[in-house]
Image 1: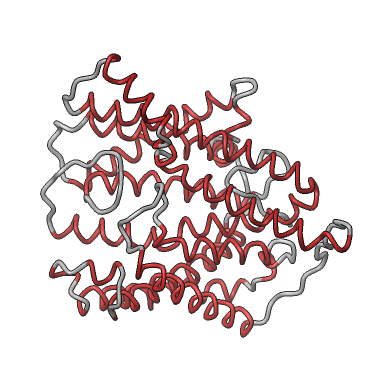
Image 2 (image 1 turned 45 degrees about the vertical axis):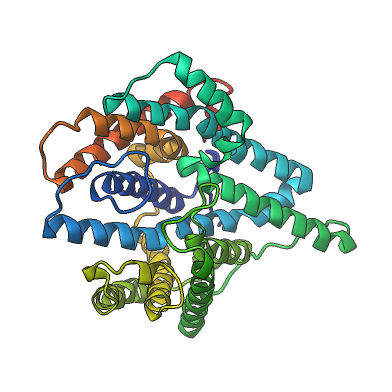
Length: 398
């Protein structure tokens, strides 16, 4: 069974993979709404609101645990498809296809949606706007190369494009001695033994934790390079490579249901108290978050280990849960899958627009986050559907 990536076109779809994709995309929209009102993380617009204990706990829990796994899961799923796509298309067609389907939407965001989102924020917060000021700044934004840092959420597409090109170059070199003959794809795959799954979880956890700790020595959490938060990239790279290995071998279908349920439960039963313990013992509750974010601190090592464990264990459990319980499509889920990548691409200006529109409304931060997230998600889905219907354009956001 072939897994699909975030931008896989319709036709021959796998229902449970589609359902994970649109679920995670909805989580991304909610996460950005949470950043807006919690102040935790990087985003176009933040509204300073007083936080009570409830909002502090809920925002911290959701944003921390979601960030730990959801983008890594998308990179893993993307990696599962890449080898077969390369085998079908060869080097030039594969790279060209990825350049169009990942590069063009990224440029659309950098050149159009990023300036639009910033303009919406400026106007919505009472700032002035004039074309005589905007156009020279936009020219400098483009000509100076600053637009490369304006990828917004499409950093994912940019990173995936880079990963895919690197893979293609490696395959070009490796396959050269045998004339570029496509690799064989596993047909019937036997279920994996529980001990094999356990070994894989622990090995991936250890590898990601080690790499994350090392990267955060020089690139701590909360910092970015060309809009890439490299402190999180250890899991993205490792899980993408894991997807390259798992996809052609049919391992998504080989994970026993019991093993998936076990690791899903363990990820929560161990992950939640471990996270709380690290935060309390590490001083995060007293304002010492920097020690968790990177550097030669035991807190940074412990946090990297916790994050890696939850990422791998919960991600594995979620894959199996959707495979076993959400492997069906109806009109609603098919529609959400159809508009998934468009929703991901276009939600930024819509979410910021909704946020500034209700900025003067006095509500609890959690209530505001939920209202903004649900409204922005629904509007983004609708807008993505309209874009998908435009001839010659819609396929870029499939």
